[in-house]
Image 1: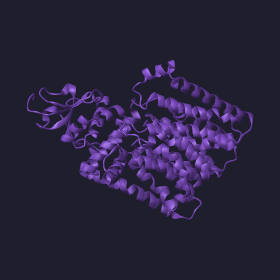
Image 2 (image 1 turned 60 degrees about the horizontal axis):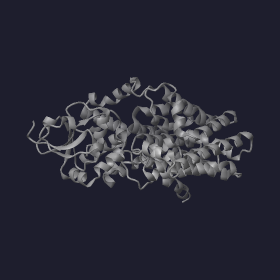
Image 3 (image 1 turned 180 degrees about the vertical axis):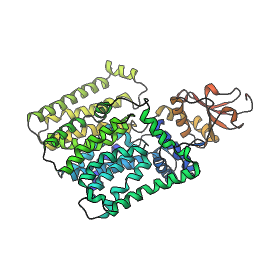
Image 4 (image 1 turned 135 degrees about the horizontal axis):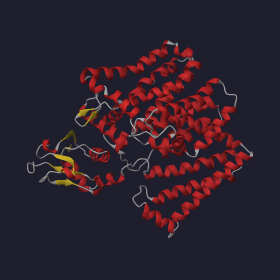
Length: 521
C-alpha cells in the first residue's frame, strides 16, 4: 500500500488521455511486426510483409503481440510493455538508491529524478526495445547486489536469469552491460558466481533464446538467421549513425538537464568520500565502463545512453541531498542560479503568452504546425520558471527541494497530457481518422505495392498508413502483380493509369490508397 501511494505522483507522467500515434522508426516497425505475429500465429521469425527478416531479436514484438492478443490491436496496447517496464525501472532504481545511498527518502528522490529526466520519459512512451532492456539490466544489478547478503535463492537465480531475456529484447547490446558489471561480480560477488542457483538461473534465462534460435535455424536456415550477426557487423562499421567518441559527453547532459549538473556534484562527493568497494564499483566504475563501451561502439544514438540514466539519477540524488541541506556559498550560488534560470523562463513565457506581444506572434507564425500548440510550451515553461524562481526564497531544505522538483513535474506533466510524448505523428493520424478516410480503410483488405526501392521517408510513411489499415494483407509486391480489385497503398509516381484512388491526403504523400484494375496493366 505504501508503494502504491508513493507511485501516485508519477501517474500524470506515464498515463495520458491524449491520442497516441506511432513514430515510424522504430516503434511503428515493432508494432507492425507484432500485429502480423498476432494475426498469423507465426511466432518464430520476425515478419516484414511477406518475408522473414532477422535484423533484430524478437523479444519486443513478442511482448506487443501478446498484448494485442489479450487486449486488441491499438497504439495504446502497443505501448503497454514499455510503460510497464518504465514503472519497473522506477521501482528498481528506488530499491538501488535505498540500498546504496541509505534512507532519508533516497529511494523516492532517485525515482523522482529518473521520472523527470526528459530522455527517460521520452522512451517510457515509445514502443521500443530500450525501456524493457533498462528494466532487465536494473533487475540484474539489484539481484547481484542482494544475492551477496541474503540467503534467499531467488535473488541468486535472478542474478543469472536476466541476461537471456535481455538478449531476446536487444540482442548483442546486452553484452556491454554484462562487461561493465563484471568488475563488481568478480571482485564483490565471486561466491555468488559459484552457487548452483546462479548457473541454473543463467541456463533458464538462455533457454528461450536457445529454443528460438534452434527452431529458427531448423525451419528457416542459417542464411536467414545469420542476419542478426550481419546487422551487428553493419552497425559496428557503418558511418550512418557514427557521431565520434565524445557523442555521449554532450548528448547525455543535453537530454538529462538539469539533473546532470547535480549528478556531477554527487560524483564529486563520492570520489572524496570513504565509500566501501561495492559502492565504488557500482556507483562510479559501472557507469564509467558502460559509458566507455558505448562510446567505443561505432553506432551512437540517444537511446543507448538511456542505460546510464538510472545511475545519473542516483548521483543526482546524492547531489540534491547535499545541495538541499547545504548552507555554504556553493549551495547559495546554485540556488541563485536556479532562481535566475527560472526568472528567465518565466519572462520568456510571459513574452509569448501576453496578448499582442511580438514574441507571441513570431512563435505562432514560425511554429504553427507544432504539436502541442506553442502556447502550451509557453505555459509549461512558465510553470517551471515560477517554481524555480522561488527556490532562492525557500529556507527549509525540504521546501527548496520541493520547489526544484515541482517545476519539472508540472511542465512535463502538462506536455505529457497534451500528447507531446504520445502523439508522435499527429498530422498523419488526423488525416487517417477523417470519416471518409476511415470508411475507405475499412471497406476492404489492403496490401502494399512498390516497384522501386523505398527511401527512408517513404518507408516511414508506409509504416504509418499500414498501421492505420484495419485489415492489412502482409504482402509488398510490384504493382503488376496486384490482383484486380485489390486495394493497395502505392506511391503516387508508381500509380498505373486507370487505377482509381480511394484515399489521398497531403499528409500521406507520396502514398495513396488505390484499387487495382485490369486497365493500365
